[in-house]
Image 1: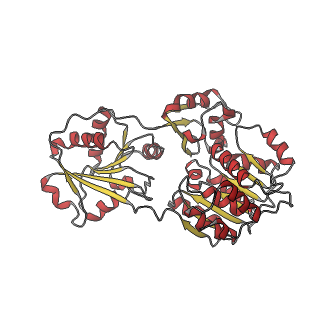
Image 2: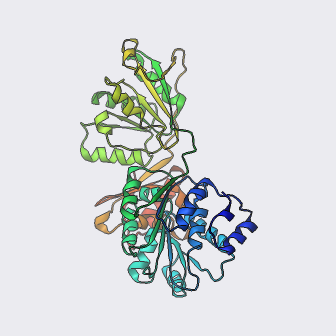
Image 3: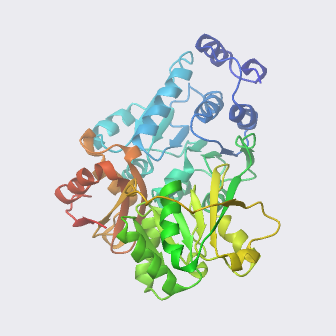
Amino acid sequence: MQFSALNLHQDLLRNLQDLGWKETTPIQAQALPAIIAGRDVIGIAKTGSGKTGAFSLGLLNKIDTKAFHVQVLIMCPTRELADQVTREIRRLARYLANTKILSLCGGVPLGRQIGSLRHGAHIIVGTPGRITKHIQKGTLDVSGVKFVVLDEADRMLDMGFEDEVTGILSSLRADRQTLLFSATFQPEIKSLCDAVTQDACVVDATTDEAPNSIEELGYVTHDDERGADLAFILSTHDPDQAIVFCNMKVTCDRVVKRLKGLGWSCAALHGDMEQKDRELVMILFKQKSVRILVATDVAARGLDIEQLAAVVNYDLPEQPEVYIHRIGRTGRAGESGLAISLYTPAQAHRLPNDRQVVQKSLYGHVESTKPAPPKMATLCIRGGRKDKLRPGDIVGALTFSGQGIEGHQIGKIHVRDFDAFVAVNSMVAKRALQLLTEGQIKGRRFKARKV
């Protein structure tokens, strides 16, 4: 679609022409008409798809620059993304006279932001934690906000910002226009959408991508060689993360012991484990601090992992529907997946007849290579909800005043009543732990350790 075909302000069109923007991207073509029409919009699109341009142009087309109060509120999960969005909006608003855009993020003194807010702004871009703080202090008046954007909503949920986001939205007028953009449409995102949007138009810019593709491989093994064959398969395919399914709890423990002996980052998950241990394992796996999860079907029920690289049937299930359920955990949201099954010649009949399982040979393979460590590390903070600790406080402590790590190096955050877990890139784990133990969170010192 040509931008000129859209009902955009002439100053916006003139700027787009000067920028060399002639045609919309798929997400812009689908979302912009609905945004301009005043609809709530749920946009599913990956990074680099042009979603920032979609909501920025739609909202710049609607604001009243003569009414000098906050009309647009844009929430982003990290300071880096908020800065990027702020720059892009300023670039697109070049020819709109007197349009003021203000960024409110952690890592910047509160007093400086309060001073800027006193001078007024039309558009606020910020992180949920800092926006919440200004609303609570009364330094940010959101009574006139007509348009709100949740950018990378899936990432905000990953980082534990759901309470802050819903709290902010509850303080806004009910007749606002809400735009929510996410790379995936997981159940958690759908629940958030249902709660914060009204009669939303759903646009999915990922539908042109190739359908979910799962490569299914079968390896014939023998019971006394199954453990060595599993190690070779994992070493050969080297998935970032995988679930290895076993039919019995005792098998899970035996497989974990063997893989750990070979240097794999792995953990068991089954019904004989205490609940607190199972919860910890699930946190670590979701935070990508454990590469291989060895589990029974019952224990893994409800464990929803995005972009799981591979599923391995160490034991083939008895029922075909269990096989389908297992392999369906990989190859989601347009990603390719890998499903591997080990079976003896006598168990070949358990492979589903209606699936195309490519047979592979294991004979003559060489010794498994030493696996790489996980890309993420999990740090545990001895403080949680009972200590008034929030995800935004943890992010602020880790990215403090440009002396800490960067926002994109922080992964999922999980806050419980008395402790909190934060995933960070393994390369900066030592620095992150130092920031948490030597610095302060909300003016207090907390003990922290690497899990």
